[in-house]
Length: 202
Image 1 (cartoon, one colour):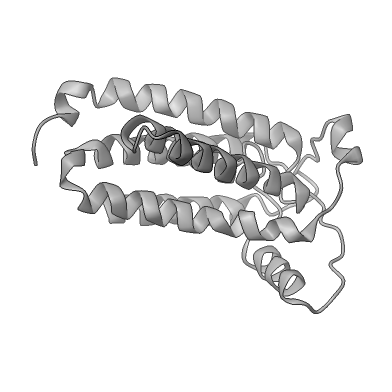
Image 2 (cartoon, one colour):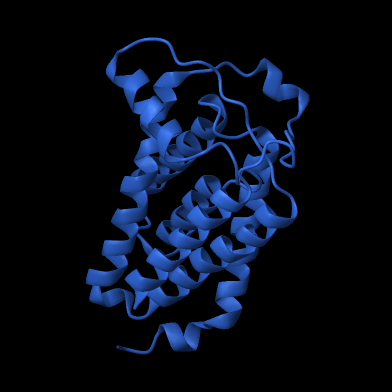
C-alpha cells in the first residue's frame, strides 16, 4: 500500500509537469542572488544522491520493525507534499531556463540525463528540497542520536538542497518554498497520524 502511494504521487508529479509545459504561461521567478550563483555541473552527484536517500529511508522504515507505524506518518508527509505542490504547479506554473551543458564526461552526461528526464517546469516549490527535508526530519527524529550520524545526514541534505540551484534545476525561491512545504507537511502528518497511532504494533 505504501509503495502504491509513492507510485501514485510520482504519477501526479509527471502529469502536472506535462500539463504545465508551456513557457508562455510559466513564470521565471528568481531572486537577485540567483544571477550570482555559479553553474556547477559536479553538483549533479549530490542531486542524484536524493534518490538513494529516498529509497534508504523508505526501506529502513519498512523493514525495521522497531519503527512500528512510522512509515505511515512519513508517507503521509511525502504524499501531502506531492499533492499540495501539484496544486501550486497548476495555479502558479514556473520555469527555469537551463544553461548549455558542454562536455562529454560522466558528470555532463549525467546532468543531461537529468535534464532529459525532468522538464524544467514544476519548479516552485522544489519537491527535491521538500522531500529531502522530510527524509532528514525523519532520520533526525527516529534514527540514531549519534552526533556523527546527524552531522552526516545534515551535510547530505544541505548538499542536495544546494544542488538544485547549482545545476539550475531550481532557483532560490523554489528552495525556500520547498523548505516551507516540508515544515507544513510534517506538521500536518503529525496531526493526521498522532503518536498514539504510531506506537501501535502492526
